[in-house]
Image 1 (cartoon, helix red, strand yellow):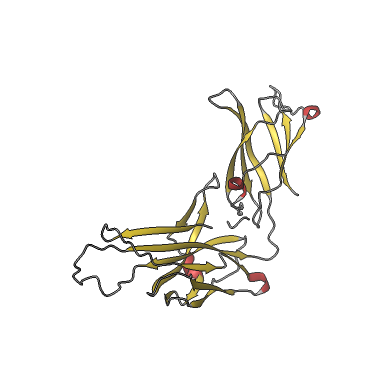
Image 2 (cartoon, rainbow, N blue to C red):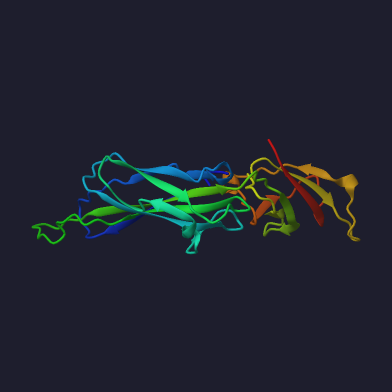
Length: 264
């Protein structure tokens, strides 16, 4: 599982001008936190640190836990406003970070029971705008100020006892692109209890004849070359993932059966 997380910045302009002082941001570490509930590790600390820069004002930061989902393509992460936060206590959940300061925040699991499968939650740190106190002062010349509000999207992974992935192929079909080139559209599903790291994917491709029978004599091994984008987000239990892969050169284009495995 890759730093299965993103940092987003939002800029707010108060007035166009020639001089735009920029206030530095902060960092959240670590971005991925593991809570091994079966080993009685129910809490962990993250640190919020003011980055070095010219900023001389405090930063208001709010932290919250949300449900986290990765889309079937593995590229888009969404956060759900569900009851996930009820399973955690984040303390303090609101901080004021002074320039050059580091503060520690505790994240504690308070759920009623240990989840049956490995689960990822989002730990969201949002910076709120802070008034400097001089906004209403009259100025002889036009001035502007650029405030960069930083949002960190961390991950909390909650583990049950002995989580194990069990990833299977949902379907594997041929698709011809606009240039006439065949692609393998592979859909997989993790029906286990642990997350599946996607690097090292290996496939066994077997052609299927018109009667639906597998031609095992023509079975071939296929190790697709996956991009970092395709392997960045691990596949958590209960989720599907789609891959658009080059068609294996040794296999005839048509109906196939595919078996999946992972390894170095």
